[in-house]
Length: 190
Image (cartoon, rainbow, N blue to C red; front, side, top):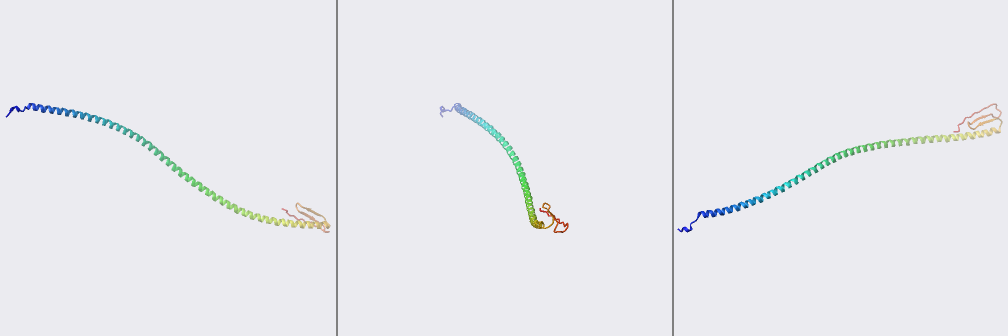
């Protein structure tokens, strides 16, 4: 065989080793570059996520403050509602009491009005009776007056003395020759 073509293992190994070292150094450089890139990306992501986390925490704190404020407002509103409900119940009770009192007073006033009407009717009836009595008495007085006037004029024509007091309507008469015949009449002209 031709030895000129002898393989020089050392040179082949050296060549392969050189290729391998070259590939390894490129791979290492690529790996380091990739690692650095990934590290930078991870740092950026971590920083971004940290900022997002901080923003989220801040938002949560803000939301918690808003929730606390709204919870306090809701509690105040509930207390005010309870107070208003109590006030409404009291107002309804007072209104019902006022209406009941007004109805009682109205019933009392209607009863008093009815009694006053009945009393007025009785008084009117009594007044009519008194007026009828007065009219009868006035007619009787007028009749007695006419009788007295007629008697007075008859006595004046005859003998005797006549004493007539118109205020108390007292009449003293001495008639035609009869000694001391006295007649006294008492009449009320009211």
